[in-house]
Length: 155
Image (cartoon, rainbow, N blue to C red; front, side, top):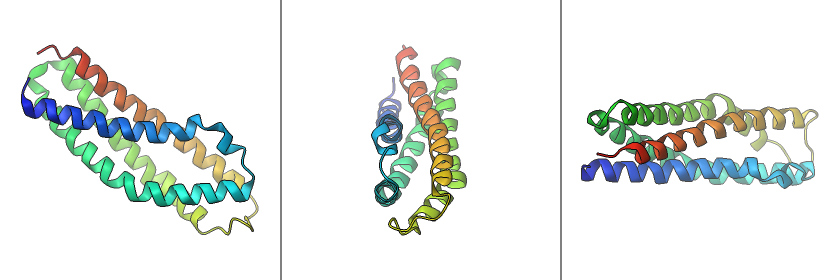
């Protein structure tokens, strides 16, 4: 296996894995959903700052590494190439879902005063959580594809 393929695949696995784990944590933390409205919104707003700062470079680097790993997987066989390519598509879909669905809701929530929540704020939270669940499934599936591509590549 080429050094560049090995390195790009390890970088892709690491970055996509970090991303998948980060979004999965929100799904696996049911206690957060039980917080009172003001506390939940403060948590949501804090996450928006942290994720907004760290996720774009992480995802862009992960996409770049996955592009390289996919391109270099061409001679490794259809299964390895297919898994790598599907992983790339899934990560790109998470970005599209984030930009089109989740970010607009984040901007709405960022404008709220946690101590004076608007009527119907929980419907927006519920819509965000549903979209986040879809994004999480895509990210975990992308990571699983990369892990599987690594496991089946016997070259």
